[in-house]
Image (cartoon, rainbow over all chains, first blue to last red; front, side):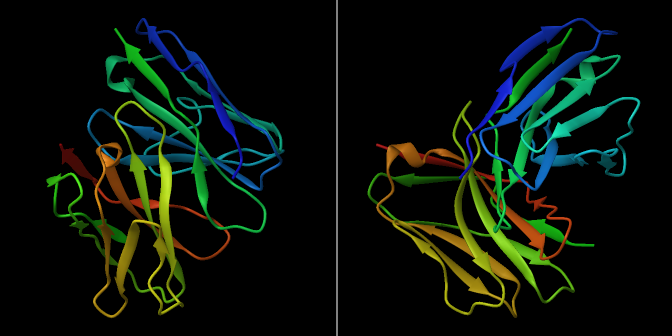
Length: 114
Length: 115
């Protein structure tokens, strides 16, 4: 499986600010996703990061709040904009490699908003 | 819409014993995948096991095996010879086979392996 890294691993931010999370994969992958895991809860898909085009957002998530970029087949960013304490979560990226239908997850970014 | 239900929020097992985690799902699809993922405390989510719906044979990975009952829409995970390192949150997940690769997760079962 691919090796996936995320930066930062954790951060503490003030409300009203924005944070950009990076996801880097060591090989080209067909699909990349961004998930949110609120404290003590399961994972919720935010969006599919599409290479070279706008991300596809799930119901309840909008581009103005969670802009996503995917400039190539190995890298994506998720920005959490105008943060509030309710945005405190773990944010995870996942990838699907070629010739597989299985998702593999990055280590996550633990975000705390004060 | 598909749903995944894990009815056991927490479970406990003694080291070296066997434990079974339950998962049921609801779908009208016939072609799909089911997964178990493990998330140890403050550590990365990792794939435990995967089952393709069209395969009748239950998947196994070392000490981990599943009991896949397609008609009953049940997908339980059996962990044999439990080890302290198995302590984690376990998530069951469904994915319709196709272009989107979207995963739908259950709420998770927190498994504690006791020495």
